[in-house]
Length: 363
Length: 128
Image (tube, rainbow over all chains, first blue to last red):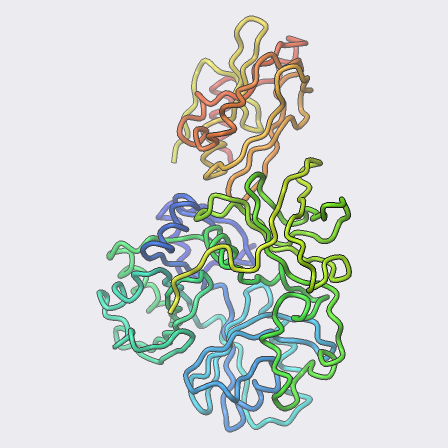
C-alpha cells in the first residue's frame, strides 16, 4: 500500500498516470514526457515532490552539527544559502544526497530523498546521539508538502499569484521564509532540472491553494518521468543510480562536495585515504537509447563500465547516459572519447563528453 | 481516456493487434499500448526473411522512459517488414493501427484461436 501526497486527488483528476515511487503513489506523467520536459525548458512546469523528506535542526549549535554531519561546507555558506551535499557514513560511503537550507542562525532545514527518509533519519539520530552538539533534530516530513516550480517563466508566475516578494532578488541556491494566504512558506531557488525555479515548502492545506493558483495560471503539471529526463540532461546525480550505499562521493564526480579543509566531519578520515575505483562519465549516442545496466566497452571491446542512468534526451533527440567507468580501464588522464554500448547484443557508438548534455538556464 | 479498438482486428493480451488476410498476419501495437507507453522514440523488429515464434520477443518498442518487448502473436516467417516506421517511431503514437510493423506468413492457423476479438480485448483493457 503506497502513501499518497496531499495532491493525489488533483493528479488523478488531471488524468495523471500514477505509479508507486519510494513508497508513494506519484504522478509519473500527465500528458507526455516530451511536452512536460519542453514546458520546463521553455516556459514553466510544476512538480509535486511532496514525497521528499524534511528534517529540521534547531538550536545554538545547529550549524556546527550539520557542518559535522555532511561533507560540504555549511559553516562557511552565507546565511539563507542552500547547499547540496552528500551524507556519508564514517567509512565514506553515501547514505543519501540532500540539500541543506541555512534558514537562520539556529534553524536549518534538510531536504532528503523520499526513498531514504527512514535510513537518513536513523543515521542522523545516531550521529546526534554520539556527539554533543547543542541542538534538536526533528523529522517533519509528514507535515510538509513540496512543490518544485521550474522553468524560465518561474518569476513571472510567482508574481502573478503573489507568492514571495522581490523574488528576483533571491539568488540561485538561496531560500527565504515568507507566507501565502497568511500561512508560512519556505521559498528556495532550488530544483533539480537545471532551469531557474523555486521549491515551495508549506503545509498540505496551503500547498493545495498554491497548486490551484498555478493551475489557474497555465503552469504545466509535470510528472516524475520528465523530472528524471530533465535532471539527466543536465547531468545531475540521482540516488539509487549514480549514488548508492556501496560507493563514496569520490566515485561519482562529487569531489567538489567534499571539503577537506573544514573541521572534522563524518567520513573525513576515510575519504582522505580513499582511492576512487569508479569515475562517473557522460555518454551521448546518435543511435540507440542507453539504459541502466547496459555495458560500456572501449574500442578494443573490453567492458570498461556500466550505464547507471540513460534516456532519450528530449532536447537533443539523442541517447544520453551517465555511466560508472572503472578507473583502471578508463583513467582520468585518458584522452579516449569513442566507446561502444551493448544494447541487446548489438553494438552502438557512444561519445564521451565532458560538458552537461544540455545547459539549463538557472541563475 | 478511452483507447481506440478496431472491430476487424484480433488482439493479444500483451496489446499487439493482428490483421488476418488469408494466410498473412499483419502485426502492430494497439492504441491502448501506445497510450500506456507514452512518447515512442525507438522501434526495432526483424527484416523480411526472419522467422518469429508465438509468445517470444521479436523486437522492442522504447518510449523515452521505458523499453518493452514486442511479443509475437503468431509464429511464421516475416514476408514484409515496415522498416520505414523505425525512422518515425512517433507515428505509432499518432496512429497505432496504421503503424504496422511486420507481415507474417501464418505457419499454424490454429494459433489464431488464442487471439482475442475486439469485445474480449475491450474487456481486457477495461480491467487494466
